[in-house]
Length: 129
Length: 277
Image (cartoon, rainbow over all chains, first blue to last red; front, top):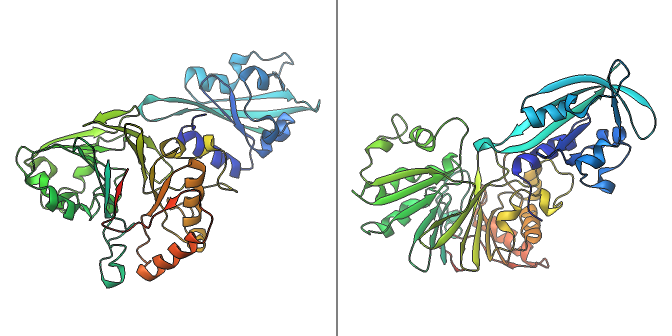
């Protein structure tokens, strides 16, 4: 198993120290890491799940728009950050594994390394009042 | 390959009677391949003595810089082969997203910091960003990768056949971790050091000193040993000694380390030491 890029390692170390829920994904959208506050949103612990494929982790909660309709994946900030290589923000509702609906704000930005290497993206979620 | 330490000190050159055994010169390591290729790792003040040894030769010299902090480039202007007309010298350094290596080095090698300009050197000088893919120099395979240290900093792995040297003189893989070491996959520098026959690694601080200098980009001797253990290095050389650590203190650290049950050979990082890899 090869080592992650140092930029991802440093991002994980920063995320581990912050109080906002943070998700770190690779260029394909696979979930590489989520911190303790994010564990509460997902309803599972990183130490137990480890990395998750994009299909696995996107099925853990259902994003719903302000109009009550499910949001397509391409509307989500992380998807925009990964595929359009720009920062994005959106407020929407999610229903996690615990069945509770929460309004959250999500901001995502791409991680681009030197030489134009696409390393993945970071998603920051927090509950909206 | 043969590896010689010309400078082992970190941060600041500290020549004097109290550092005479471990050495007072800053980072510089000579690597000689079987075909006599010469790689020089970093251009700390130790490079001045190396330059006197190799002056007048005809062979190409490849100088690999890990980063451009002063203790790693201060000797550059005193490396005699740079002043030899026609001598082929290649300098490799960490990439930057904004400035090329020549521009960054010229900040030091130009007035008012230095009297000679980089562009006025008579040797045949070529500068390269260390590429992310492996490259070959005189039969030696070189791999560079970014590592955890402030600013753009790379470590190097140099291989010849099945033998390998890993050089990470400035490295803080424990930064931000509650427990170190963690998983290899999430450990800065792991791929460079994995299974290396010789690992030269930052061991600047005692555990107590490190607690006051977290984020400065260096390792405690304890973390360096943990890193060497995770990486499965066969021999480990502590390097980048703190300028406040005199020979007596380094002897003391050395003796404490040797009381442990180490899974690798532990060799003191002393100026002048030579290793066959």
